[in-house]
Length: 230
Image (cartoon, rainbow, N blue to C red; front, side, top):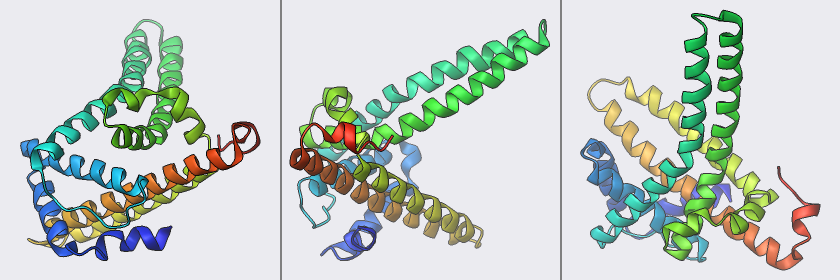
């Protein structure tokens, strides 16, 4: 899967054009709409790969890309509400208590930090599967169909793919940081590297999701008990 993900965009017919457009949109992401288009393109990648299409999509039907990108952002924001709320309640509350009861306030803040980290990591793990589900079904509600998502995220295929995608994103981040220090053009190149890494990770998420789904269909419901990933 690693080699296929790296070559997914590179081997497409319009690779140079797609990377150029994606990078330019990412550069102007602060204008919001370009960032939504890039996110919409990522959703298109998820949809194609999960359907078994090995050809990377092109930037077309920009209105559809923008709408899909906006829906994807909303899904991510909804999932992010829980760790954000925990941070406000426990960490904020603990800091406020420290003025009057330092020990208890410190304990609450520490507990809140650990809890927020764990829940945040869980959200980071589940969100890619939710986005693939949304890409497949086309409705925002499908991104919250937990009865369908739970068996997927518990499957070893998905867990392995998620870790691989995480590793690629981390490495790409390190490379981008190193390149960005080069005067003038360094940060521009870093943006294009980031876009390529995002597409690569999307390929892995969708492939892993599809393989986890196939695994469930092949081995039946008992897979949840015999091969849990978490």
